[in-house]
Image 1: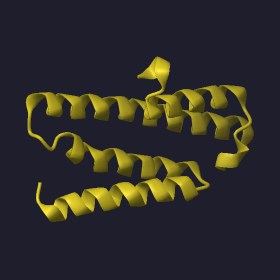
Image 2: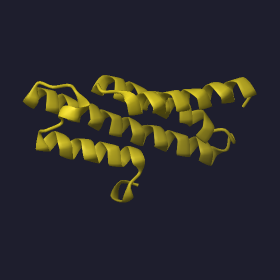
Image 3: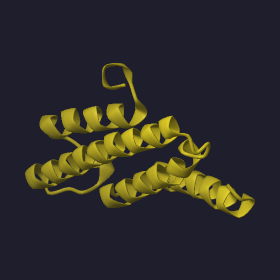
Length: 112
């Protein structure tokens, strides 16, 4: 990978993480999580080996499923409470779905 592409990928990863941490709306957090997913894919598949490509594909599919679950959680919360704010996650079903989505995205134990 040339240095410019590597720099763009790493800066996108840092910028997406920073904006995700500082966001207070579900759509902004989801968008930045997707930026992180797309920024890490070239770094995973960098060696151009079939196993690296397979790992990148699996990573993308799992992260896309977790992002879908995260958006479903925020939509469910907005349906029941009328709030799209991250700090107003009060419905138990939404909390459970969000915890599951974040656990998948982090690769925690039952979801790794």
